[in-house]
Image 1 (cartoon, rainbow, N blue to C red):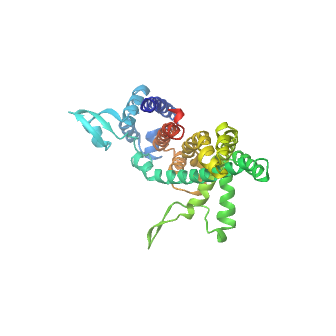
Image 2 (image 1 turned 90 degrees about the vertical axis):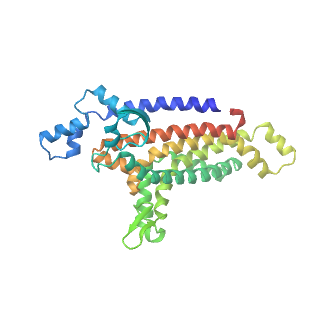
Image 3 (image 1 turned 30 degrees about the vertical axis):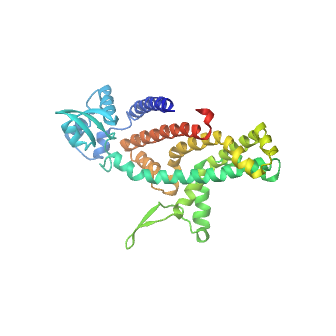
Amino acid sequence: MVQLITRKLLYGLLVLAGVVVLVFFLFQGFGDPARLVLGQTGDKATIENIRKELALDQPKWKQFVMYLNDVSPIAIHTKEEIASKQLKGIFIGGHTKLAIKIPYLRRSYQSKKNVSEVLAEALPGTLILALTAMLIATVLGIFLGIVAAIKQNTWMDTSAVLGSVLGISAPSFFMGILLAYFFGFVLSNYTGLHMTGSLFDYDTFKGRQLQLQNLVLPAITLGIRPLAIITQLTRSAMLDVMQQDYIRTAYAKGLSKRAVIWKHALRNALNPVVTAITGWFAELLAGAFFVEYIFGWKGIGKVTVDALEKLDFPVVMGSVLVTATFFILVNILADVLYGVIDPRVK
């Protein structure tokens, strides 16, 4: 298992290296960063100073090396760079130091804040939204899949399969608009839900207020597609497992149907479901972008879309790197869970 995790980490680092290359060169040529920092005002001398400060006067290959040095957790920095960039970590050496640091994602063109701070403020909202959506999808999906398998060829089975097909076919942004309009606007007086809102609202007199009702619609919207897939996977896996010899042996020993299903069949049917759950959780971190934007949910997705509108590329580039990192970590976690659920994987 240790060797597997080590190998996966190495693969993950290679993937991240590819993402860094792609992110850097993808945003080359999308406007002059110096002009984006200053806005439409600013004389030529000021613009040239900004270009020099951002190293935009250097060749592209050198700009890339400097960017790689910034985002790498192990890098080389001077005392001046450590102070100006407010780097945090362990620094070894004299004027030029070996740094083991938190990756520096540079500064926002608009707010002038460190991108890592901007994303750190938004990340909890995205994680809470993705976890809630995945929890809804997992609990309901496994339950509906078991019911559909047990009641095969009945109206329950047909309804579960039809609902799954519709759930897979419906784009998240389309379902988000429908749910926001009907439950957050037309039926708002009955549901108590709103079209937009974040987990915390700020009241002038009461201060920071937790608003859990604002989580309902975006979480359901985000969880529809994984719910549909988990339902189908659980149904298919359960139907396959229920035909195995050890299930017939369990019945022959006099075990109840409930004990056979929950203690024997379900555990062995969960492997493909775990694959879907972990894979979709990583997908939800990326798929939350438009859902967050539709519902005004403060998370990485909304921050990224807002940054794209303002051409704030450091924020966009940082969010892509953070999302890719979570995607890799979640997939490594999936491999560990396989060994826990099914010892044969070890």
